[in-house]
Amino acid sequence: MASSYTCTLFILNFILLSLSTISSFEDDFVETLVATRTEKTTHLHFYFQDRPGGRNPTAVQIIARKGLGFGTTYMIDDALTRSADRGSEIIGRAQGMYSVATRNDLGLLMVVSFCFTQGKYNGSSLSMLGRNHVMDNVREMPIVGGSGLFRFARGYALAHTVWFDVKTGDATVQYNVSVNHF
Ligand SMILES: *[C@@H]1O[C@H](CO)[C@@H](O)[C@H](O)[C@H]1NC(C)=O
Ligand SMILES: *[C@@H]1O[C@H](CO)[C@@H](O)[C@H](O)[C@H]1NC(C)=O
Image (spheres, rainbow, N blue to C red):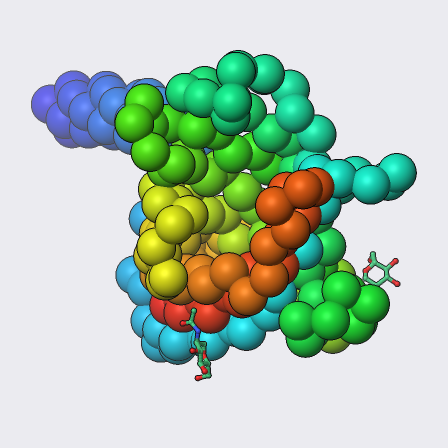
């Protein structure tokens, strides 16, 4: 009697152990933690130096359409500077692309990583994805994510063109970015 009871317990234990082993085998690639960190808001202010013209362009046309028409696409690795002066200190780069996404006026789809190279944010980046209706005085585009110190970032960018050369297409654009992150 006693031995049959022990035997039943043993088998039950074995089954429970096997079940827990199976479930931990299935879930061991997932871990859920309770978030306790507090979110902060960071404001960034810089100038985007778009240079499709000249001998050393940082924006190159990769899809050409007549008269900068629908579908025209540029790949960019533009400098981000501290002030509007194109020779001022470079604090990062805008890497990505933009395309003319409108058939009737000049609206761009921007797909850009702002990669910072100075100070505390060196190595961290923000991802911007959105519509840039370039003829508007101020354009708003969403910040959809980030890396490094900007992990979990989300927010928005406000852009205002401060200088534009009609002949070369070169432009300097002021950016104010607000992001929430941890
Ligand atoms: C930024 O980080 C890179 C890679 O770690 C390093 O080589 C570079 O010196 C850093 N730049 C500054 C200004 O700290
Ligand atoms: C960016 O912020 C500065 C300082 O507050 C302000 O003068 C400027 O108009 C802002 N620009 C944009 C595009 O929001």
